[in-house]
Image (cartoon, rainbow, N blue to C red; front, side, top):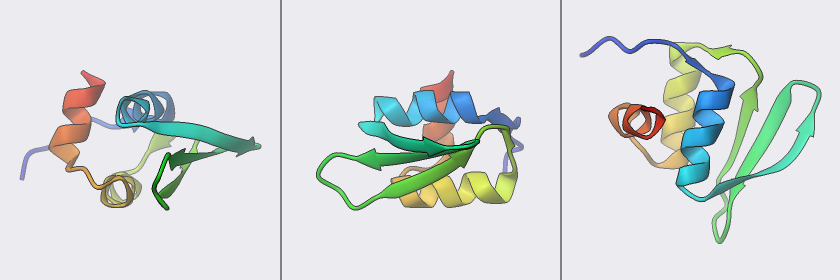
Length: 73
């Protein structure tokens, strides 16, 4: 399994917006993203994302970690 560099919340939000996710609302440091015509809701905290949380975000978005890193770069 390859090692991935940590991602910031801004990088993840930018990558998910390329997939059609939009910011629905923000409360404090938590940002809720939703995808049009989908029930996917992803909550991102405004800091560096841990590997476990990144896996969860990828699973909810329906994308692999490799795919997410390609969108970020």
